[in-house]
Length: 235
Image (cartoon, rainbow, N blue to C red; front, side):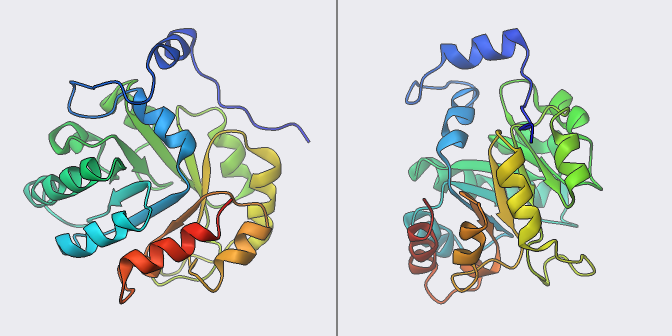
C-alpha cells in the first residue's frame, strides 16, 4: 500500500526547518514551532470550558494538546474562555487548539484550529489562520482519510472508534479504520471517540500511537491520574 504523504510547499518546508523547538515566539502563538511540538504529541484532550483547577490537573498528567470546544457559544464567551486555556497551556508547554472557529484563532491566541467534516474546509481554515498555525481535520472513513492527503492540514483525527455521546448519531468506525490509518498515513493522526483507559490498549494494539479523548479526562474524578494512565499506554 502507498502511504499517504502530506504535501508541503517549498516555502513552508523552509520556514519549518528554520525554526527549532524552544526558540522564543513573539507572535502570541507557537508559529512553526507548533508543528515541531505536534510531531512529538501523543495525548490530546478535547473539552469545553472546564474549571481551571481541573484543566491544570489534566495538563500536569501529560496532556500535549488541549482543544477548546464550545459549540453554540458567543464569540465573546469563546475568547474569554480561551484566556485561561492559553495561559494554562503555556505553563505546561502544551499546544492550544480552537474548535471550528478559524476566525477567532488570532483573538484567542490559539496555536491552530480543528475543523470537522461539516465545518469550514481546511483550505478556508488555512486561509484564515495563515501558514504558521496548525490546522486539524476530522475523518470518519477511508475516503476522508485519503482526501486529507490533498488538504492543507497538519494532523487528522480518526474516529469515532467507539460509540460516544459526544457525537450523537455518529456510527463508530471501529478499529479497522485505525488499522487503515496506521498503514496509510505518515502525517500525525489521533484516534478519537469513546476511548478511555479500558479501551485504549486495544486501540494502540490496532496501530494508534496518538489518542484524543474527551470524557476519559473531563469526567474523571482525578484528571491528572486519568491522563497519566492513558499516557502510560502510548508508545
